[in-house]
Length: 150
Image (cartoon, rainbow, N blue to C red):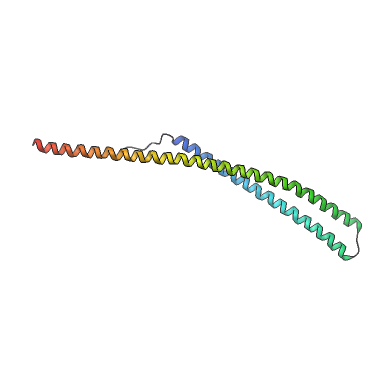
């Protein structure tokens, strides 16, 4: 029986590897985004803690000006860190979007080559089927002709 050979199998293999690489890059970008989001949540939590400390100090009645200044300075520092982290977070989101686009493109290219492979395989099956029919016809006609001669 004939063996199916897809002429562009090497290209399909490369596309599969590129898709795997794009999946890895997307997973890394996604993990990086999650890490940056967690950092932002932690900074916001710390800022809320300092704000609550200031409120608690003011409710006690006895205000310690030095402590108040320290906490207000901490709140301002946290706000600056939050703004910086927000920028880092936006960059991580953009990187993840780029990785997603690259992955989608790689998947589409792979699917195109897989469709080409399927079509080529269908054509191969049709050729093999036609060849088998031809052989059967030849065998039948040979057998019929052989009987006539006897």
